Length: 426
Image (tube, one colour):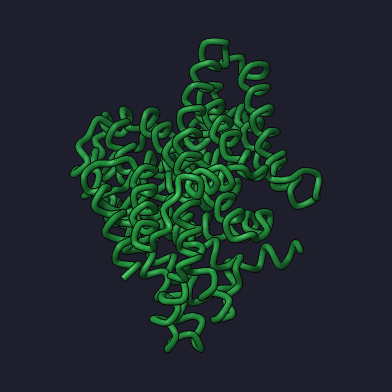
């Protein structure tokens, strides 16, 4: 009964258009009323306690780093680098979008920010070159969701905090799945454009042009090397890495590229502050729901449903991933992580599923949920940035959505593809 109350009291306000954070609080109040446990103090204490975590400071800093990279010219140089290497192929702008999405993913960790930036830079050119606008925006949206998987990932940070597992190991384990997501988009885009007669966007770059593009983009590419290297070497924590990312982005944008002025820096700070406030409010509200899920033992009820499959870890993992796919169509990225982690982690323990492996696939699954209708916040970002309707982008994203779901299925079957970097380096 308590599960029914939780689901209905959460989904009904969402269906009425209530913001996610307030819907989470409503669902918490409904559960507390059912248990005759209502107390404003409990709500306040859990909201404050859930957001009062040093590691969570990495979230606003990585969001700010992403905004500074867009404002300071780092993102544009990544796109220019992609043009130099793959812009001359048939369908080259699509490959540029995928290349840029993967590199930007290793810089900011924000799917919405990366999608909006790439859409703003590439969609006018893709329209002019005769690409289908809906399909192009769908590709960019599907590339944007690589950001929560490849480190530094805000989603992996949030999962690591909630599940109490190593964020550094999560970062390392996210590398291969992120690369495979990008590879699946390359294959799908190639199949779509195979046999096409679209003229290349630009001629093949000369050796001099390639060297110039590499020289200009080196400062941007160095950032993920510094972050991952520093985390692996124990030089700094994930939170300190986020601060370093902000400092590095500001320095390169203001001093090296000289495109980050006071006005653009202030605008980036405002955008990052708004995004951070929204994320942290959701984290705080979800902390109340997570506490209630724990004391009402909902996770045991869910585990009992999966009990017949516990002896088969891969089958259990597949069933959990299917559950998250369904939930991801109705809930946004961060709330799903915060609500479902306390429910699913005990099941992982019973089935002897590595929490690092589960965390990466869980976050990847939630990232895919960002491009599944009807909620799909990255779909909305792509539609807004490209000036298209949500229906057009949704139709265009389907081939790429299927490709990324296939990658998820492969990783369920072959866990070592996920785990070997973390095991190799630890």
